Image 1 (cartoon, rainbow, N blue to C red):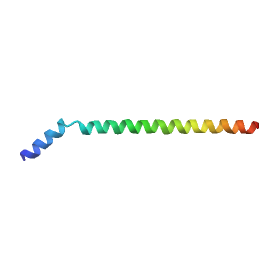
Image 2 (image 1 turned 90 degrees about the horizontal axis):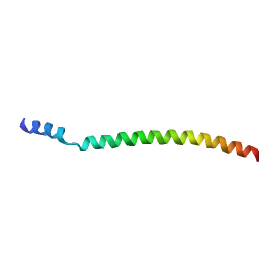
Image 3 (image 1 turned 45 degrees about the vertical axis):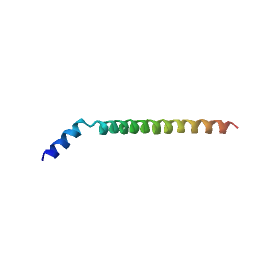
Length: 56
């Protein structure tokens, strides 16, 4: 029982899991922003190339 209590207290002090979670959240937000930006930019560039191609 004492070992279980020590293990639970140790989890409260260990910050590695929190840091990994923060990095995962940052990576998820960054991936979402990049996908949104590339999707929007890709459609606008496609429309620009179609307009340029129509002139020639």
